Structure formats: structure tokens, C-alpha cells
Length: 131
Image (cartoon, rainbow, N blue to C red; front, side):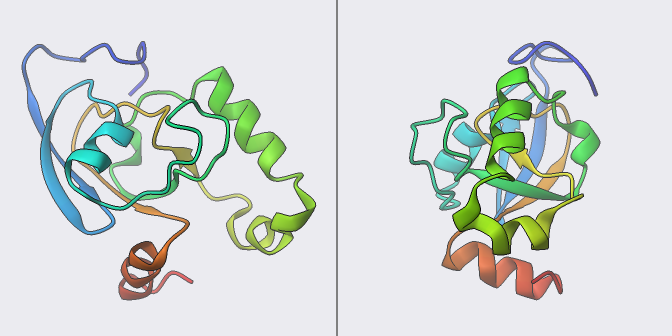
């Protein structure tokens, strides 16, 4: 669902959000990154949620259409991330996937995502058969 970041698609509606296997109910229009912090879902967050480092990158497993449209900053960060030479192995693995930055995505409806980085995210991806 497209929409302005942070703006709810319907007033005062709670939606189910699962991040790295941790489920939480959040308000429609809540930032995915904040939901991850609230749920102790252990997403990496080196830049403090400013869309610069891409360490909060997530792969939607279900309900990806229920996230806000990618912001310009998110598109730029992910585009330049793919160019980083040290991340060549990640580029190969995730190229063409609907990767999102949790700090730039807002929840519009039920969604399930898994992080690309970290031990907990690796376990959740393995449970879903994702490398």
C-alpha cells in the first residue's frame, strides 16, 4: 500500500507484525524499525534509523505489500549498498529480492519480515529455508 511515511492508512487500527520471529501488535503507520525495537527482534541499527547504513535491511516473508512505499533515501541507500565491494557475497544472494530498510518502512497491515544480518535472523531464515 502506498502512502505517506508515518501516516496511518486507517485511524487507530492495530496490526500484527512479526520481525525475526518476534510478534507484536503495532499501530497502523508505525515504523517497522521501532516495532523491531519494541519486540526485541534484534535488528542491526548502526546509523540509528536514518536510512544510511542498511544494516536494518529486511526481507518480507509475508505481507510486503502492507509496508509503505520505499522512500527516496531507502532506494538510494539500497542502490549504493549493492555497489559496495566488501558486500559482494550479499549482493549475489539478495539481488532482485524485495529488500526493505526497517527504518524507512511503515507498517500498513499485517507483515512478517526477517533481517539480513545477525544470528537470530539467520535462524529464522533457516527455518523458512532461506539462506
